[in-house]
Length: 450
Image 1 (cartoon, one colour):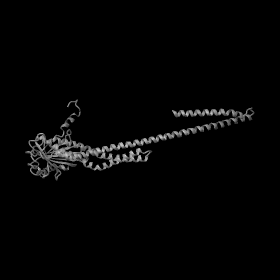
Image 2 (cartoon, one colour; image 1 turned 90 degrees about the vertical axis):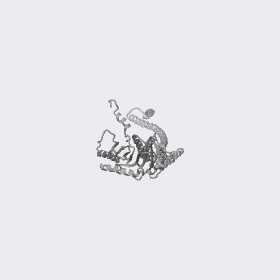
Image 3 (cartoon, one colour; image 1 turned 120 degrees about the vertical axis):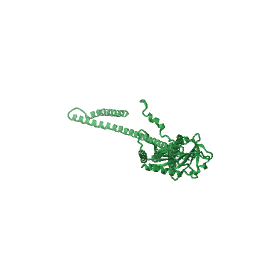
Image 4 (spheres, one colour; image 1 turned 60 degrees about the horizontal axis):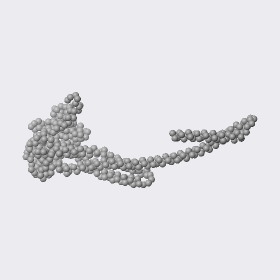
């Protein structure tokens, strides 16, 4: 790398080579299991693969991806491999080994023998067996590759699946291989796939195995949301009906005259309760529905990678998924859409009710302000009346004081007449007090205007 390269260029580039398929021999068997993980089981899976790596004498390389490892339990010619992949919410462990004999009878019998031999290899290394690695198993596939002539009819392979109805198709563009399965769980929890092929390349066989293993894991992971969607059907219907009734009552209330504060508060409380229920469902299950949709898309991608071609008279795996799996995913997608639409409708109805309440409150405020303004005017008029009377009272007291002073002067020998002085002073004093009163009222009025 050069100094002017982006610091993450190598990491970003190597992502296209991450988790490559394992090249398979013509007659090999892949036992792939996926486990759903929580925080505790996720750590248990990491410790399991690290213990197995140490038991095999493999040093931990800090530069490599710790979510993908391929370990060799037994060398050639037996060649037993363990492929471990850690994903967001699940881990996949695939055991790859050779078929010791040609398959003629039920696949379950030979698989039990192979599982026992793989468990023995792990126990010899003092490592827990695959079923004890941690997590809850969500999928398990038995992929049997065999180099042999292809079949012409489904009856020729039904004995391998205990006489069950089988699905089948040619796979890949050159039709150099077939895919057969009954898509049923055996007594040990595996789904068996038989892949006869005529000179199928090792890398191509590895890609087929990866596509089938991922398709089953993604199918089961996507289906986790289906029981949730079914359980939400009736509660959602009840919530939608309740919202419709509330919307009708609010609409009727709009046409009624007068103010209905109590009813508005009741409706707002019911809407808040309904909104909290909807948000609780979205918080609990929204991520699960989103993951289900993403897994469904990945399943379709892997099925398309198989490039199935029909065998006359036999239903293919893709056709089966279209008829059985897609309706379940449609239920999940529709439930997710109903949740979102319910939340949006509650929000719009609440906003409408809040607008009505705000309008009523504004109307009440306007009436209150008008009433306060009227009371203030009446109070001002009363005050003006009182002030007019106070001018008379003040004039009376001022003239009376002046008369007392004049009487005192007369007694002192001054030639004055108190009554005449009082008569002359009364209008003058009244005018002075009246001017002072008017100036004060004008000053108060100017302050109010400012």
